[in-house]
Image (cartoon, rainbow, N blue to C red; front, top):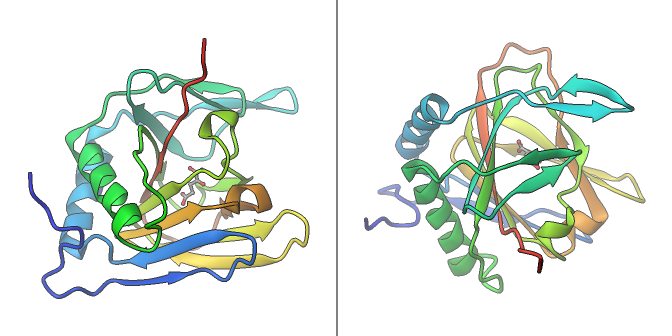
Length: 217
Ligand SMILES: O=C(O)CCC(=O)C(=O)O
Protein backbone atom coordinates (compact mmCIF):
# COMPACT_ATOMS: atom_id res chain seq x y z
CA UNK A 1 0.00 0.00 0.00
CA UNK A 2 1.27 3.47 -0.86
CA UNK A 3 1.08 6.16 1.75
CA UNK A 4 2.64 9.52 2.18
CA UNK A 5 4.61 10.08 5.32
CA UNK A 6 2.54 13.00 6.50
CA UNK A 7 -0.94 12.41 5.26
CA UNK A 8 -2.43 15.83 5.93
CA UNK A 9 -3.52 17.57 2.73
CA UNK A 10 -2.05 20.71 4.14
CA UNK A 11 1.09 19.74 6.06
CA UNK A 12 0.58 20.97 9.60
CA UNK A 13 3.58 19.12 10.96
CA UNK A 14 6.02 20.90 13.15
CA UNK A 15 9.16 19.30 14.47
CA UNK A 16 11.86 20.42 16.85
CA UNK A 17 14.71 19.07 18.97
CA UNK A 18 14.19 19.07 22.71
CA UNK A 19 16.78 21.12 24.65
CA UNK A 20 18.44 18.11 26.31
CA UNK A 21 22.17 18.81 26.43
CA UNK A 22 23.18 15.14 26.58
CA UNK A 23 20.26 13.68 24.68
CA UNK A 24 19.03 13.54 21.11
CA UNK A 25 15.25 13.82 21.08
CA UNK A 26 13.04 15.14 18.27
CA UNK A 27 9.33 15.82 18.59
CA UNK A 28 6.98 15.75 15.58
CA UNK A 29 3.48 17.03 16.20
CA UNK A 30 0.86 15.99 13.61
CA UNK A 31 3.06 13.23 12.23
CA UNK A 32 -0.29 11.53 11.67
CA UNK A 33 -3.31 13.55 10.57
CA UNK A 34 -6.17 13.88 13.04
CA UNK A 35 -8.33 11.47 10.99
CA UNK A 36 -5.57 8.84 10.67
CA UNK A 37 -4.70 9.07 14.36
CA UNK A 38 -8.41 8.73 15.28
CA UNK A 39 -8.70 5.61 13.12
CA UNK A 40 -5.57 3.96 14.55
CA UNK A 41 -6.66 4.80 18.10
CA UNK A 42 -10.06 3.09 17.63
CA UNK A 43 -8.55 0.06 15.85
CA UNK A 44 -5.74 -0.55 18.32
CA UNK A 45 -7.99 -0.10 21.34
CA UNK A 46 -10.37 -2.75 19.93
CA UNK A 47 -7.83 -5.14 18.38
CA UNK A 48 -4.85 -5.53 20.67
CA UNK A 49 -4.86 -8.25 23.36
CA UNK A 50 -4.41 -5.78 26.24
CA UNK A 51 -3.39 -7.24 29.59
CA UNK A 52 -2.38 -5.94 32.99
CA UNK A 53 0.90 -7.53 33.97
CA UNK A 54 2.33 -7.97 37.45
CA UNK A 55 5.92 -7.17 38.35
CA UNK A 56 7.82 -7.72 41.62
CA UNK A 57 8.77 -4.56 43.51
CA UNK A 58 10.84 -5.03 46.68
CA UNK A 59 9.83 -8.69 46.60
CA UNK A 60 6.08 -7.98 46.40
CA UNK A 61 3.82 -8.54 43.36
CA UNK A 62 2.49 -5.22 42.03
CA UNK A 63 0.10 -4.73 39.11
CA UNK A 64 1.54 -2.24 36.65
CA UNK A 65 -0.65 0.89 36.40
CA UNK A 66 -1.67 0.53 32.74
CA UNK A 67 -2.46 -2.21 30.22
CA UNK A 68 0.07 -3.30 27.65
CA UNK A 69 0.64 -5.54 24.66
CA UNK A 70 3.99 -6.62 23.22
CA UNK A 71 4.29 -7.28 19.46
CA UNK A 72 7.13 -8.07 17.11
CA UNK A 73 9.02 -10.51 14.97
CA UNK A 74 8.87 -14.08 16.36
CA UNK A 75 12.35 -13.97 17.94
CA UNK A 76 11.67 -10.73 19.86
CA UNK A 77 11.17 -11.91 23.42
CA UNK A 78 11.65 -8.94 25.76
CA UNK A 79 12.41 -8.72 29.47
CA UNK A 80 12.09 -5.68 31.72
CA UNK A 81 11.50 -5.44 35.48
CA UNK A 82 11.79 -9.25 35.59
CA UNK A 83 8.79 -9.51 33.27
CA UNK A 84 9.41 -11.61 30.16
CA UNK A 85 7.06 -11.07 27.23
CA UNK A 86 6.74 -13.24 24.12
CA UNK A 87 5.72 -11.28 21.05
CA UNK A 88 2.20 -11.14 19.69
CA UNK A 89 2.23 -10.95 15.88
CA UNK A 90 2.20 -7.63 14.01
CA UNK A 91 -1.28 -6.37 13.21
CA UNK A 92 -1.92 -4.47 9.98
CA UNK A 93 -2.24 -1.18 11.92
CA UNK A 94 0.97 -1.73 13.89
CA UNK A 95 2.90 -2.68 10.74
CA UNK A 96 1.56 0.44 8.99
CA UNK A 97 2.57 2.78 11.85
CA UNK A 98 5.97 1.04 12.12
CA UNK A 99 6.69 1.75 8.41
CA UNK A 100 5.71 5.41 8.91
CA UNK A 101 8.09 5.70 11.88
CA UNK A 102 10.96 4.09 9.94
CA UNK A 103 10.44 6.62 7.14
CA UNK A 104 10.27 9.44 9.64
CA UNK A 105 13.62 8.38 11.13
CA UNK A 106 15.23 8.11 7.71
CA UNK A 107 13.82 11.10 5.89
CA UNK A 108 13.64 13.65 8.65
CA UNK A 109 15.61 14.80 11.67
CA UNK A 110 17.21 11.50 12.43
CA UNK A 111 18.48 10.90 8.90
CA UNK A 112 21.74 9.60 10.35
CA UNK A 113 19.77 6.73 11.83
CA UNK A 114 18.81 3.95 9.44
CA UNK A 115 16.41 2.01 11.55
CA UNK A 116 14.39 -1.13 11.10
CA UNK A 117 12.14 -1.66 14.09
CA UNK A 118 11.38 -5.30 14.91
CA UNK A 119 9.15 -4.86 17.96
CA UNK A 120 6.76 -2.50 19.70
CA UNK A 121 5.47 -2.08 23.23
CA UNK A 122 1.89 -0.80 23.22
CA UNK A 123 0.72 0.91 26.42
CA UNK A 124 -2.93 1.71 27.16
CA UNK A 125 -3.41 4.44 29.78
CA UNK A 126 -7.09 4.06 30.67
CA UNK A 127 -7.33 7.35 32.59
CA UNK A 128 -5.25 9.77 34.66
CA UNK A 129 -4.51 7.15 37.29
CA UNK A 130 -2.54 5.09 34.78
CA UNK A 131 1.11 6.07 34.57
CA UNK A 132 4.69 5.00 33.79
CA UNK A 133 7.34 5.49 36.47
CA UNK A 134 10.75 7.01 35.68
CA UNK A 135 13.00 4.59 33.82
CA UNK A 136 15.33 4.50 30.85
CA UNK A 137 15.07 2.08 27.97
CA UNK A 138 18.52 0.64 28.50
CA UNK A 139 18.00 -3.12 28.52
CA UNK A 140 21.00 -4.94 26.96
CA UNK A 141 18.95 -6.24 24.04
CA UNK A 142 18.33 -2.64 22.89
CA UNK A 143 22.06 -2.13 22.38
CA UNK A 144 24.05 1.08 22.83
CA UNK A 145 22.31 4.37 21.95
CA UNK A 146 19.04 2.82 20.76
CA UNK A 147 16.66 4.70 18.45
CA UNK A 148 13.12 4.52 19.83
CA UNK A 149 10.07 6.01 18.12
CA UNK A 150 7.19 6.79 20.48
CA UNK A 151 3.73 7.38 18.99
CA UNK A 152 0.85 8.97 20.92
CA UNK A 153 -2.84 8.37 20.12
CA UNK A 154 -5.65 9.80 22.24
CA UNK A 155 -5.35 12.02 25.30
CA UNK A 156 -2.25 14.23 25.41
CA UNK A 157 -0.03 13.54 28.44
CA UNK A 158 3.07 15.38 29.73
CA UNK A 159 6.22 13.31 29.22
CA UNK A 160 9.04 14.19 31.60
CA UNK A 161 12.77 13.69 31.04
CA UNK A 162 15.00 13.84 34.14
CA UNK A 163 18.80 13.94 33.94
CA UNK A 164 20.25 11.05 35.95
CA UNK A 165 22.92 13.21 37.64
CA UNK A 166 21.83 16.85 37.61
CA UNK A 167 18.12 15.88 38.12
CA UNK A 168 17.23 18.69 35.70
CA UNK A 169 13.79 18.11 34.18
CA UNK A 170 12.24 18.85 30.81
CA UNK A 171 8.57 18.26 30.00
CA UNK A 172 7.12 17.71 26.53
CA UNK A 173 3.36 17.37 26.03
CA UNK A 174 2.81 14.36 23.77
CA UNK A 175 -0.19 15.12 21.58
CA UNK A 176 -2.59 12.96 19.56
CA UNK A 177 -0.86 11.90 16.33
CA UNK A 178 2.62 12.91 17.47
CA UNK A 179 5.89 10.97 17.24
CA UNK A 180 8.84 11.46 19.59
CA UNK A 181 12.17 10.01 18.48
CA UNK A 182 14.74 9.29 21.17
CA UNK A 183 18.26 8.57 19.90
CA UNK A 184 21.95 9.04 20.69
CA UNK A 185 22.88 8.85 24.37
CA UNK A 186 19.41 9.83 25.64
CA UNK A 187 18.89 6.57 27.54
CA UNK A 188 22.36 6.77 29.11
CA UNK A 189 21.81 10.22 30.62
CA UNK A 190 18.07 10.54 31.20
CA UNK A 191 15.13 8.72 32.70
CA UNK A 192 11.61 9.43 31.43
CA UNK A 193 8.10 8.86 32.66
CA UNK A 194 4.39 9.77 32.64
CA UNK A 195 2.93 10.96 35.98
CA UNK A 196 -0.56 10.29 37.30
CA UNK A 197 -3.06 13.14 37.26
CA UNK A 198 -6.26 13.71 39.26
CA UNK A 199 -7.80 15.50 36.27
CA UNK A 200 -10.65 13.65 34.55
CA UNK A 201 -9.00 12.72 31.25
CA UNK A 202 -9.56 10.21 28.49
CA UNK A 203 -7.55 7.19 27.40
CA UNK A 204 -4.21 7.27 25.63
CA UNK A 205 -2.38 4.65 23.57
CA UNK A 206 1.39 4.88 23.32
CA UNK A 207 3.49 2.75 20.98
CA UNK A 208 7.25 2.57 21.44
CA UNK A 209 8.92 0.98 18.43
CA UNK A 210 12.28 -0.62 19.16
CA UNK A 211 14.98 -2.71 17.51
CA UNK A 212 15.96 -5.71 19.63
CA UNK A 213 19.38 -7.16 18.97
CA UNK A 214 19.49 -10.94 18.92
CA UNK A 215 22.27 -12.28 21.11
CA UNK A 216 24.37 -15.20 19.86
CA UNK A 217 23.23 -18.48 21.42
O1 LIG B 1 3.71 6.36 27.31
C1 LIG B 1 4.77 6.91 27.05
O2 LIG B 1 4.85 7.92 26.36
C2 LIG B 1 6.05 6.33 27.64
C3 LIG B 1 6.30 4.92 27.22
C4 LIG B 1 7.63 4.44 27.71
O3 LIG B 1 8.36 5.14 28.35
C5 LIG B 1 8.06 3.09 27.42
O4 LIG B 1 7.30 2.30 26.83
O5 LIG B 1 9.21 2.76 27.78
